[in-house]
Amino acid sequence: MRVFGLTGNIGSGKSTVAAILRDGGIPVIDADRISREVTAPGGRAHDAVVKAFGGGIVRDDGSIDRKRLGEIVFADPRLRTRLEKITHPAILEAMKEALAGLAREGYRAAVVEATLIHESGRKGLFESVISVTCNRETAISRLAARDGMARGQAEARLAAQMDADRKAGASDYVIDNSGTLEETRRQVERLVRELLGQGTHLPFHPG
Image (cartoon, rainbow, N blue to C red; front, side):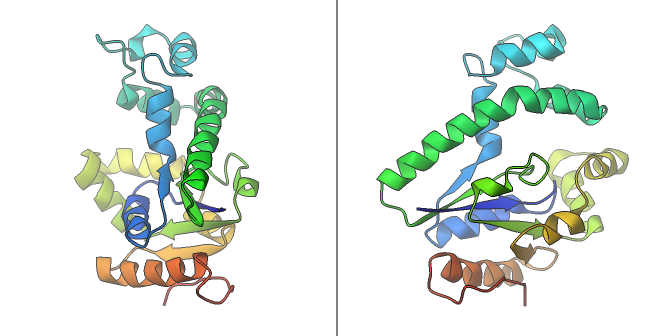
């Protein structure tokens, strides 16, 4: 089974692209969903995260307050690195298990959606990496509408991540999600044909 990575900064619209990929017959594993599972009570990384960041991030039901934890780690790169060292091995293990299950089901290709493929040095795990991009103002607007972030919060989140142009340049395929949904859909449908071996094996660029 061919395995591809899907990345892009917060607010870029990775989830939109992932949904179109699924519509095209390519299953997408959401690394953020796996992250929630491994840090849930009883999950592989839950106790280690609580031990590292204290009881202040734990809700009454024992679950981790991800919003509070996010505020902590995005304010301090060292704490963010500490969190990643705890969670990434557990996420990777769960991801490999999920991919093995898809391979057994007979899928020809699968995509892993993850924000930190390049930052965590995981590009080598994938045959190719797809980067979703959009202009800065669009990303800020999406974060305000989706997560209720103030502009300053959104800008801080974006600033804490790898530069979007660098991320796109390090990827093999680029989807520009700054325009309409239909424009994005056309790009992704073209990409699906290529990933499933129905197109030419050339780097994909929007347009």
